[in-house]
Image (cartoon, rainbow, N blue to C red; front, side):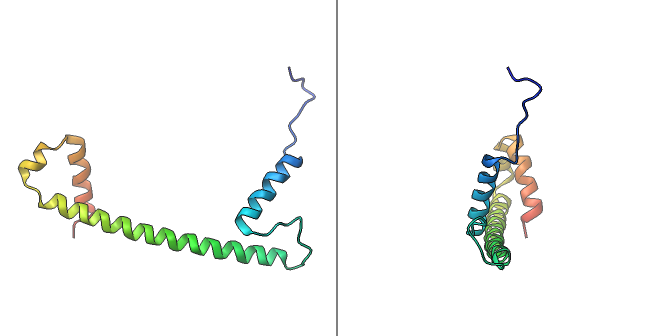
Length: 104
């Protein structure tokens, strides 16, 4: 069993190793191996560039999502009242929400 004298040191080599790995993955720049005074600026620039790329990907995905939701709303709008009534209640409620939000 552990006694009260044992504590976990989160600043130890394992924690630093994990943090360094995360930094390298995000920035491509290993702070322990850089001697340049501009390392932080390069790291910030690299991280910013990656975030801009991710933001653009999110925008594209959001646009695709909106397009597909519009298509779903249009398709649902075009089915007959009888076909709607045949759908399970929960599905019909969700599709009603999609239609009200995305049908143009």
